[in-house]
Amino acid sequence: DNGGINWDTVKKSGVSFAMIRLGYYNDLDPNYAENMKGALAAGLKTGIYFYTQALDVDTARAEADFVLSQIKDYPISYPVAYDVESDTILQNGLTKQQITDQVKAFCERIAAAGYRPIVYANNEWLNNHLDMTQLPYDIWYARYGTNGEFTNRKIWQFTETGTVAGITGNVCLEVSY
Image (cartoon, rainbow, N blue to C red):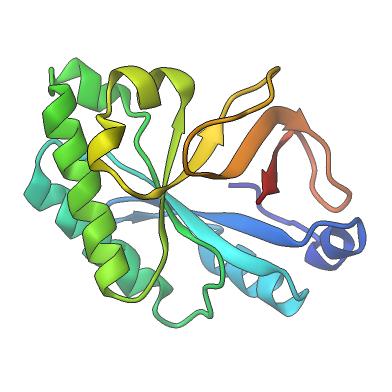
């Protein structure tokens, strides 16, 4: 999301991985390529995150194909995250099962291409808008002010107001397990 990042400074500050924002369906983050190249050149492990606005399974698959087209030229060593916290989805009245089916469709397509999918969501989404018994995927758990325990949690985002040398402004901070 942030542009103008000094990735060498980020690496020297002790950061070992970066989840780079890819953007939305057919709407690439303008800093995506610069951030990806910078993080990789600095020696960081990289994954990406993508924000869904899909309202059906076919669109979720199309989102996965878009993501795959954008990451194919980079050595992705961390997961490909599907950020499902979309007000658009809720405003359109999708059921828990419909949302779960979309997440499953996206993750299956990402996994079939040889990448490791991960579902990014907060506690409310994981418990109220997704049927996690149908989603055997890793979780990138966004929960602040608590221990961050959740089944299949592989990354825990513990703050959105962190600071990292080399990046201006607030930064989301994560621990990877």
